[in-house]
Length: 364
Image 1: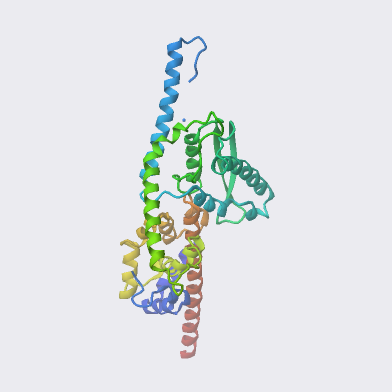
Image 2: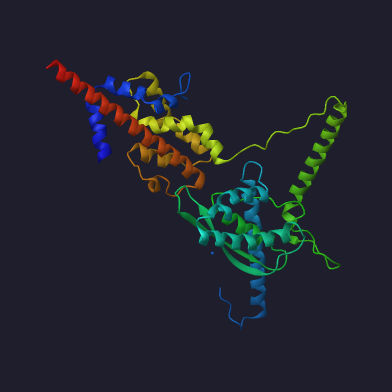
């Protein structure tokens, strides 16, 4: 109610006075770009042998269906499917026990879950072993933008002691999706290899990846040949460039820094003057054009939350409901800018009213 009263009081002032206040706000001044600043069967024990055979066929069909779903998920990814280690790195940024020093219960749960998960993955990826038969429910706590509040996601993992990579990949993919991460991933080279010893047999679950492995091998061979040619051309001692640049930073902190001007503009939408041509163009771009859709196209679900803020919502939990962690952080930044703009505008308007009352008193 206080916000509505403030808006009504502001509109009671002259349009020119509000436009002056908008331009006087340092946060809004920084928001405008430099040029135009726009743009889931029970089986009775008396069943016949044929019935039991049917059950075996059903299990085989289920496994084939799971493999088909995994192939479909990978083919629909669009771009390159990330390596498992890259997806785990993003998971670490949100669940690593070191981030929960002030919360021992969540820290201990994440430590124990990581110990189980990494033990299984080490056997698969580093030791050419099949993981032992287990059925696990591993709880992970994810940090949220709200201090002291966490999202709990359970990794429900079942291993058979044999070649069960489809089961494991399916469980990890579902878990990653619930954490707001890509579901499809690639195993590291050498994972799920042959069993050790004279009884070694090929893992039949890997058959559907053979063509992709062949293409990847050919691509690597072509890249190696190209690299050798470049090395021959650059064999002179005086020319031996080395890339010492740091790895590209894809963290949400970098995204916030690069997009801060745009986020300030989004926060300022309800306060812009439609009679000003430049401000009106910015409002049209975000309110009627593709401004918010461009953010959603980058993988951030922010449009619904932003519209709630424009309509007067100021509770963080309301505007971030149902979105992933990165989108929630972006919405939190927009809300911070909105509150700061309101504070500055209220101060400017209050000062202007005081000055006008003082001037009226002197004229009397």
